[in-house]
Length: 178
Image 1 (cartoon, rainbow, N blue to C red):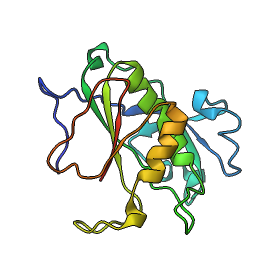
Image 2: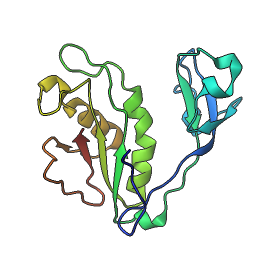
Image 3: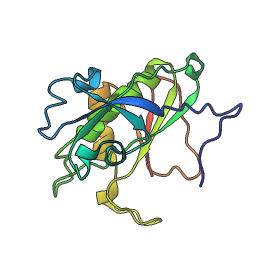
């Protein structure tokens, strides 16, 4: 398995541990601001599964919230930060995003790195792209546009990144198609 190793050029931030966790079968968490803190939550070991930790949640397949305060190291100032986000959102036949919860959920992490002065690169994918075959419906352009709206800054889309990409500390960040 390939994974990032901390060295002089790469600072790996481990966010595993005990997180606040709460099921949201009625999908009210966003409206009620659960991302800012959960009341009535349970402790959850992350990485982990609620099926493994709570017998009463075995077979629960709906929305759940995990919340943990993470502090970005000051050494991120001027450094490149790579964020792999799950931005695989549903779209209609015209390519318009129909539900953007995953994009909105990624904003605090991206904004935290930007606020720390990091040069941020976000990567994701849409659908199940075939390696080496670009199809317009796989483009992350609608996601980049929505991220731009939510962050209040341009999020350029970089599609041809194999030969490298220039990432500049704020105010510029990049969305890279995986």
